[in-house]
Image (cartoon, rainbow, N blue to C red):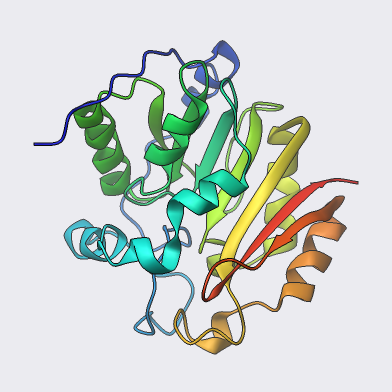
Length: 236
């Protein structure tokens, strides 16, 4: 049995006080979920991830270590003790738990998802691991009520291509960044051999242009993932 790691931390007051804004939502077919790898995605963006057992097998597949390289992704983010990170579309917390460990003991990682089942999964995961700085909250799909100036990093892995009105969405989350905060996007390249259907993929220049409209500039573009971009944005 794997040894549990206990990380003791409290949610900062600014973030804790915002949780009342995240109203309980029904299990509905909405836009955000965690990373997936394969070509069996539904033929529309707004689809449900309410079948938790099915998606757990995909999101927690041991083979994901090879193509997702989660530890390398977290290292690329340059996180440090005390950082606060929002993982939007966190799913089963595949990245959230790793981020929580990277920002411990004073930092906080919050996994946001629109599916109640995913949130409950993450909360149980955090309890099992003994990570007191790993949290999970429900979030609205179109304009998530994130705390103003609450986060060092906002992270999205294979979530961005699910969003319908992306420029407006980015504008809605930028105020949640601290002064020197960053947004990190991990999503499929157009030429990827695996991933969502090609008509769902977003060219890198389009992503950069959409962030530019929200006052963000590309500051890091890494190519270490087999089928995905790693793009990092900061305020202009």
